[in-house]
Length: 144
View 1 (cartoon, rainbow, N blue to C red):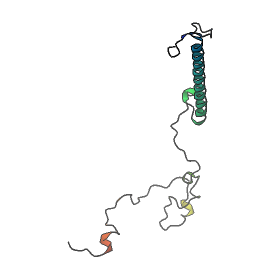
View 2: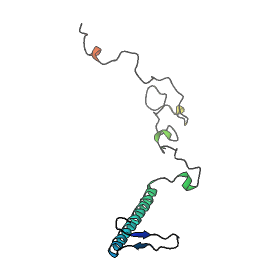
View 3: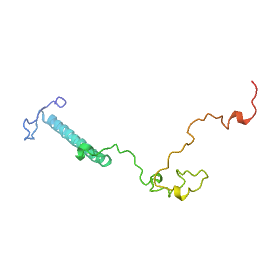
View 4: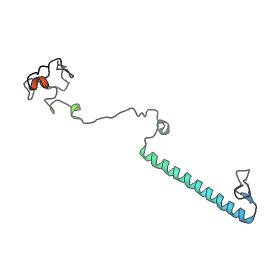
């Protein structure tokens, strides 16, 4: 290592863990401390990354490959359960979708569990009629 003016030799076989540092005694000690610090920093980083992965696993869904099931999909979307419009009958909300033009509750004979047939209703959007509000309604027109 040029920084400490020493020669460092790592073991060639994986079974040995002896590292040889050659040079002046003071330089060897400095290089040894530096290598130990680097190894500790590296191990600390590895441990932090592992802890971060474990935390992220708690907050994310498992992928289909990690669960081993190919039936797992994330395309289910947002599902509303027990919503008023998905009730078992119109008795809970009798005026929703009822064909009673006078308002109020529909006659008992019209109460069904099937949705009512589509009736012609006023469409949404701008109408072709003149507005009942605006400058033309507010007062007389002023000649230009």
